[in-house]
Image (cartoon, rainbow, N blue to C red; front, top):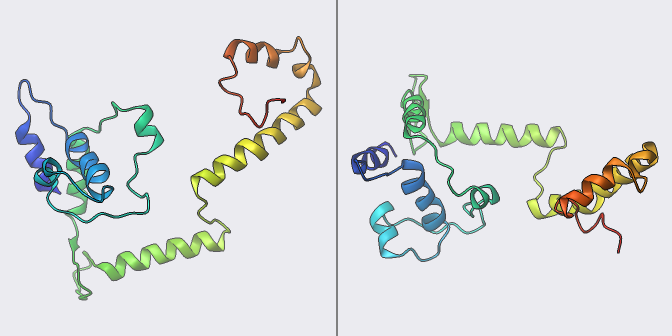
Length: 179
């Protein structure tokens, strides 16, 4: 990865604005790993890589909303400097240097993380399900409880309705609106 960072830095110039994040990583994630068939330009930029379905590399809503997000190359330099303190192996050899990280170590860390989450009762729930629950269960409940405890705010001339009138309903989910 550091070689790709250096290649992006070499492409920079007075009128050239290349960024490791925008011009390599986003291409790698969204047009490489997320596309079943990469076009020739993408293959030249990132090489031939496998398609990984499952949505892991789908463009996030934050990226869609804020398309100008960029991360300075220096942040990646510091990250790579940190990773370079360790010796990474793709096999399962055991070494005594104390700086070796292999798939067994990473697997152990991941397994421990998953088990700790399960012991706490924390499980992964897909975003569409949590979105549905919050819009159709939690928000209506919060409104009902707030109305019960602070009836004045919900009165026809109350603060809440004044704010809603000014917002054009942009913050009110359909589940909360009266039919």
